[in-house]
Length: 511
Image (cartoon, rainbow, N blue to C red; front, side, top):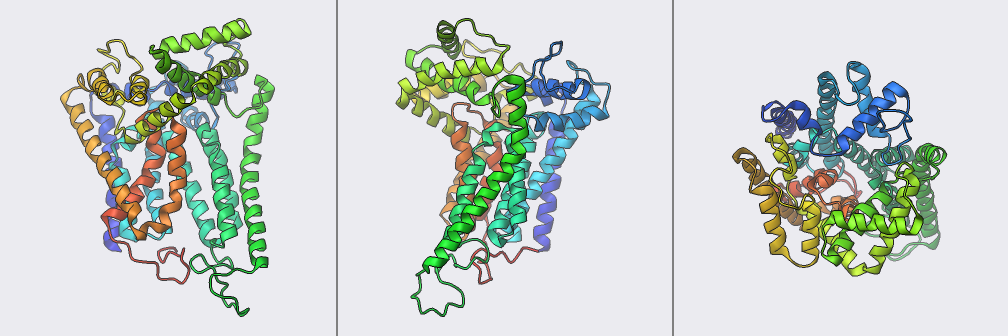
């Protein structure tokens, strides 16, 4: 136990030290490191500034301050906290003290992620040493290290995701509805941080329904491994379940699933109503239509016509204008609805090609070790310096992979990204590649081991975030599932004793 505690402490210290080194090494200005090359950071900074100074959720720097429907509010509110404490910051040039405080809060979230990974591992029945080793892997993950210092949603999003999974797992173990209610609220905050999680509560609700009907929730009447009723004196053969017991379990599963979805919906409802009132569309975010138009449809059209992605986007805009008349980009709801309508038709006209592109993007996001653009910024380079005609390298790579041209895809990445980065950054990239290969191989091994059976339900969020990423392919979008991958990898690296309680889901390491 002492060695496991020391390993957890080492993970926390290593995680903090590596992230501070990344910030303090004088390869690029501090502000550049934390806000580039992602385009999201400036948008979140503008939203946070307008929240603090003008009490409005808008990206505009001058009147009329049009309501923003693309972004959701939780992360801008998070950034508003350090902004309130550093009034010297301005809209376009945030004060260095604000950036330092914002990054400090994200470093605290990064440490929380390491601790939550350890906590989730314990509550899933892993030995303390295994859970601590998973936390160490999280601390050493280059992808998580780099995005810990970026002013993007990743650290807050992963923290909320892990909290949600801990709460769902506790409900799975103990069948306490207060934890289910808390999980619903956590799910809603997760969605209001990044809309990509919008269908995750439905997936969890289906899992809870299955738990209820199969009798695998905590001390429910039916035992998961035998299907018998404890203290059964009815004379039924082992493996049989009374009809009345099945009905009760089914009703309980439906009630619990509905409770989770209701708690999530109650928190989401005010934001949807706000969007309807100020933007004319009762939607959570225009991000869905934006992604259909800018990524799925554009990449499908570009691959079909063998054209650059930018030209495909221009073609979609021209088609939408021909159908609907002049497009008003100031009306976000209507603009992206019209663009997405045209985009969906392009996708539906080529379903197999669109499916290949989506699959290639999902796989790319899973196997990509680290964003090379982020590495180039860290090295003090322009992330697009030396590009020879393909600024959308990730999207162009997806097109080539979808068409089976793997060699050309590798050559494109090498020529446009890898060949021009300096030696130290290349060393970091090499470490990232080795770490990620080891992580994925260890995950496969861990999945094949019987002692990881209590972790198998984590495949639901893993597969969810892999598949929903799609053509928006970047290592950044793998960040939410890396702590979960580290748990499976830790099982492969260490030995886990079997649970000692009579309950198949009980962990002897729980308090």
